[in-house]
Length: 169
Length: 197
Image (tube, rainbow over all chains, first blue to last red; front, side, top):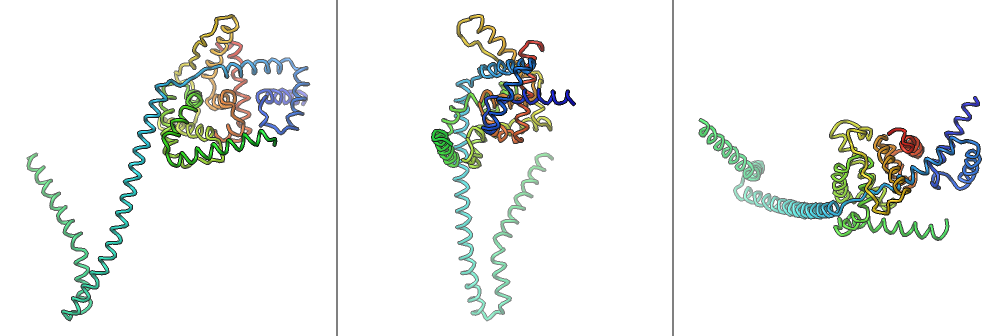
């Protein structure tokens, strides 16, 4: 039990030494009482006193290790950061342009769809067609461009693969 | 809180706010200034984590690119340095994960050279030589410490960060930071005495 208490005291003392000069570690009142306790402990404990001296030396040594960034590293980094900043800016501008285009296209599509619907309705009335007939006509008219484009792309792919096949053959 | 402390706190907050605003704008001039300002501190921290200057220099550049890309995430309630070091730390962990699934433990003793301790260029008095030898021993000892201890010691004693700031950078509780500092210093003790050499 006594040995445990003594070990705890050493642990506490060493922990306080390691955090010495760290007022953020304890509140002011705690700091004062810990400092007093540590001072008393150090007077009677040679091993903790040695630890304190070594810790002081180590901390001084740590502070004295001079590691400096080279000028070339700094300038290369600054250049890379500027280049990346430019890329990001261009990307943002492109994104903005695409967003504006998408909005414009959506608006145009809405307006033209409404106008076309009216047009088909008028034509259907003039030709005295049933409403389902001109509505199907409207649907085909709307889908037709996408269908044509799809067929054209498929045909192009087929043509290309035929050509590659003939080269290999 | 006294007037001086209040003054420093408010000027730090103001500086952080300005940095946050600049980072949101991706202001290249601000980034140039920050790179200049934090060059040595950041490199020192990265070397302490990786133990290798070459890798640290690569990660130094990557850190600033990350700062540019994620600058909008910087919260001006905190000091910029703390956030910067947290970004750098995450990059080191990402780098390790790419190599092998690991935490900072992976950055230990894999053939790394000890920290380079260049000559100070001052008069070669006995004390200076002795001090230099001691610094070399400490630098060598640092290389053999677990990366977590190394990190805590560098942030505490080289960067002068508070325990709270270190806890924030390393994302660990205050108690863990305290114990890492204590254990790190204890582990360096034999190196200081030259026993481990």
